[in-house]
Image 1 (tube, rainbow, N blue to C red):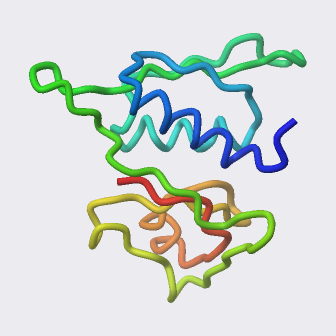
Image 2: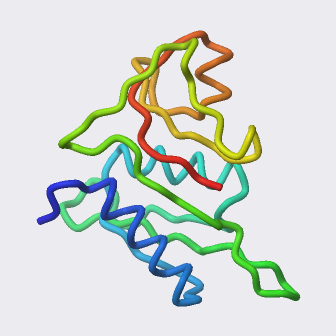
Length: 133
């Protein structure tokens, strides 16, 4: 069992991208589902599917996105920011900008998991989970 399931989720995606895999399967949780939906909405992954929902062995299958000609992946860098040993919280005025606005910071707020731009629009802060570019 992993002590940091979000870091495990991000590492599985990072390893699949670096190995050139098309699909990666990850154990499911509600937080991982929310992060997956954000990655899909922002265009970092091609498709996702939640399998065996409601059971103990539920999982998420993620189809990674590559450029059709150059085979360059859509995810250049995915990095965990807040860890179990050192949580990183920000208020609405200190929200991070990733690659000067070209990347996405995923933030867990009291209103749910959202991007830095959505959190800024709602004027709320929270825990910075990861940066994606």
